[in-house]
Image 1 (spheres, rainbow, N blue to C red):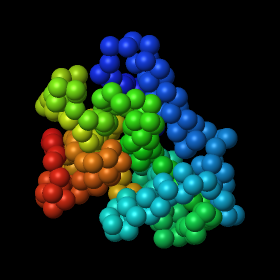
Image 2: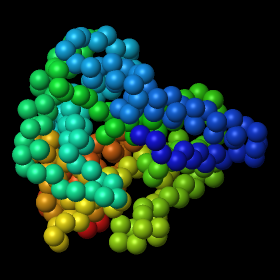
Image 3: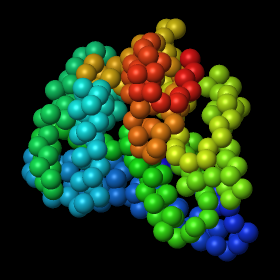
Length: 275
């Protein structure tokens, strides 16, 4: 979930702006530490030991409720138990394609329906894990927005690694400006978006993919098959009321493969899809 943390504040008070930026970074760090799957001292590590019920706090419960809601609405396409596929997929510099046998061995350990969630108690079967990485960064953006709104009446925009949320337009009514990176020319903007309020989130495989025998394998994996869906876009950016909502829709669009645009049209949202 770690991403560059940027806060743009409409204020002439430099000290005040620095304080808001510090608060934003602290909130991003807090959420990273609490929900990262890479740590062995947080609630996710405790849950992933498996086999025994774990009582979670209210914030974790809200995220689990949201994950369950997304699982249900997406008919299983979004599944926070599918993170264990990283054991066989490596999208690093020396990435390789796993065998079907390796993937098949993990599939029995995927499926939110196998998890027992009775708020505030969660029981994950032995051999299974949860991974909130698919919603963590977007949640951090929205949580930080809420936090900063309590601290200032000034307009501001939060940008965590390209996922944005604006508290409102500037005092003169003008929008904040943000760009969508061109997947064909990384570093260049494919579009410049005027954002007065609401959020943007982007999903894609521009930087995390494996090219093998002429086939591109992106890092967004189908929890049912364990493989990337063919013909997925390179990137999808969605505008929505919250960053969390935008992030879920952009991820689900990637999983639709060739039908990504059709799916997004059905959601009646503003989007930018690049292939």
